[in-house]
Image 1 (spheres, helix red, strand yellow):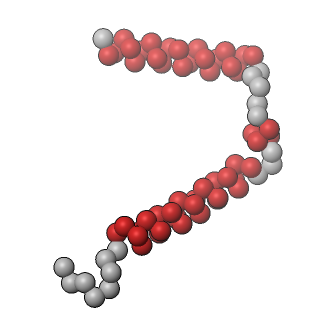
Image 2: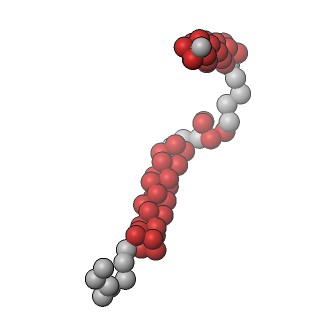
Image 3: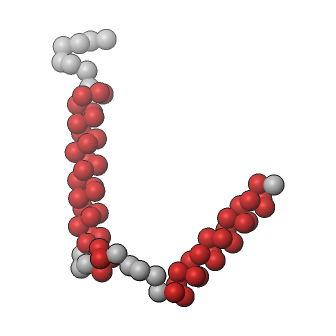
Length: 68
């Protein structure tokens, strides 16, 4: 049963990709903007670092002087 379900999902996915490629689907403006994806990636990485450092400070680190 699971094998048939995965096979059907695969066929639908490939069919959808072929249909989108054949119809020249609408593309949003940001896919055509120069260097958008590079800037988006850099901003995303910076946000990941900032949020993870803040979580480390607030949640993971022990206060100084505590020897548990």
